[in-house]
Length: 217
Image (cartoon, rainbow, N blue to C red; front, side, top):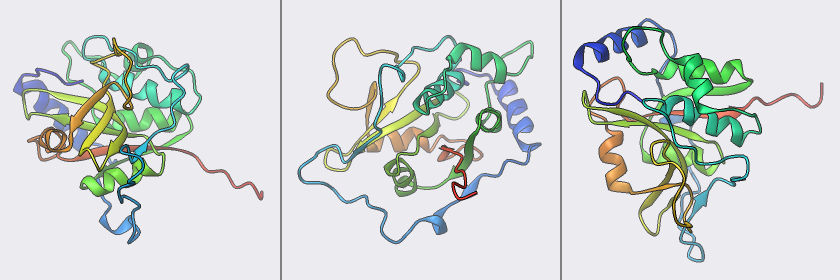
């Protein structure tokens, strides 16, 4: 999490990001013509990840640790034991002040743990497409220099115009939820904070997939 940053540390973070080669990829051309986002009249929740909540719990983050907790949630989804605090300590910069964790450090962490991660930019259909393929998606949301925050998209409903997330800042739900995740946002509200007000981070998301092995080898 890059929450309540002053302008100077954030500018430093942007400079760090610019020095690395991880591209932000426009993916409009990667999508098939039919993205399977049509509404299902028998199921108001048109898609949600098949989560095993015994291993993929909605843990509550420590201060500014949303990056580590989002990463740990996805690693547990893929069957890898992981804790948010430990991952955050591995990927955070060791500086006198907190500048947050930019996307390339999350991507490097996943790749070091045998998961294929990519930073991308796109629109809502692109985001839903990857999620509908049961690929976990980390989104970076925020309000410019005021705050930045990582969450994991775990489902959406076309009928209800809602999106469902694991939000590390929210933690476990105190009441049983019928909807996926631990946080529900209207699509319009999500888009307003996903726009982000920072050119480098606007509508950015990270896809994380298992590395496909050639079974014929």
